Image (cartoon, rainbow, N blue to C red; front, side, top):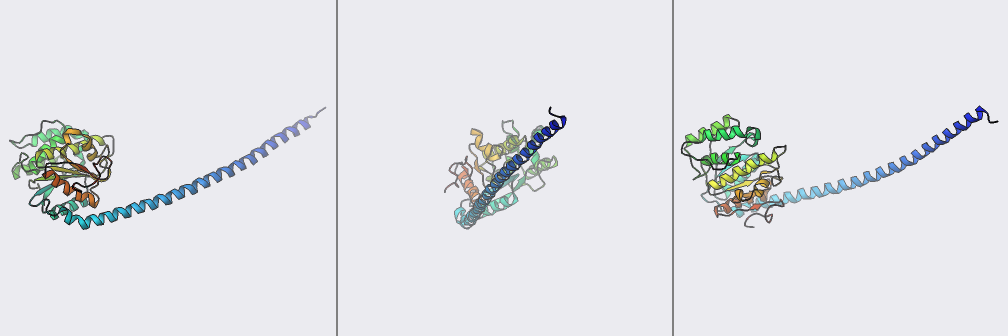
Length: 306
């Protein structure tokens, strides 16, 4: 007869064997997992090294391109804007871009009359009704707003009287009152009203973010388009990313007939993009328009006239 002691020893032996098997199996599996993870780590390290080298090469190429653009810029723009004036609208742009474009306008024989700097509140859908109402209230006697009802067109129509020659021009006192009203409501930063100009450059940043990014980008795009319709022409110049679906340049390029007369630049942070901005101003004077830069939706991806 098999004793209880034998049963206990047999069961213990079975569990011991199972335990040993699990330990040995786990050890083999761990070795295989460690080997796979190590290989993947080494592969990722190689990819990081390669991508870092590619990035450094691209940065070096861009730096060389900017240096070349800076050297050829005076000759490229010389005389293109002789005796012409340009007003700047800062719609989320960079001070460095504004200074560089203003310098090139001067080298082209033109003059920048001043800057109107908009705040982010202009593109805030939550404040659209307030801005629309304020636009109508600040409109000087005798001036007219465009028939369009969207915020960008209305603000562009109001600003055209201040910024654009022949755009329903207002007196200096009226211009000051308009900007004071917009500044007091938080839509414009404090500053002196520019003298009315022949042309306008609207400077913006890259792609906007947030749930209302597309709507905010549309305000800037349509504001620029209205300034273009009100005078001799306008250029909307944005930084890298601005040609995307939530960037003002991208919205303008996709907006069809309403923005067809507006020239756009999507890489104004580069030397070539800044030169292209001035060349596009000359293009506007000639009654033409185009889209330029490095994004896929830029026509040809080169500066006008190149």
